[in-house]
Image 1: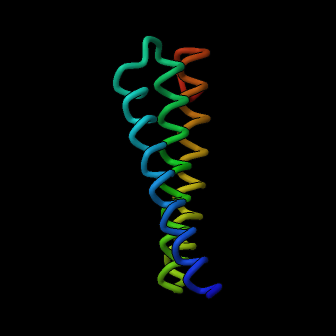
Image 2 (image 1 turned 180 degrees about the vertical axis):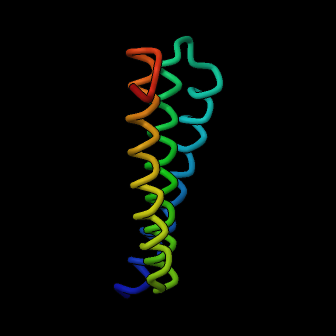
Image 3 (image 1 turned 120 degrees about the vertical axis):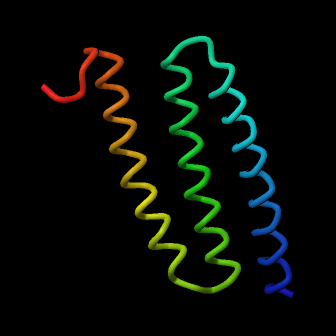
Length: 93
């Protein structure tokens, strides 16, 4: 009973995060300002990272967790670089 409950809750969580990814993509494409687009991109990579973690929980393999960590690191660095570019107009000083 508990395995079925966990399986269904992971599936429902994946559907909710997929909906959040669609909404973040729409905000990224239609955002009125560049700051909105950067924030939507940030939300999109976090949702993608969570999708990988949930998929790793469903399949029971470790490779998805490592991939989610790499996406998290690259997403953080890209968000910082885009924020610095929007604030100052240059990334490298």
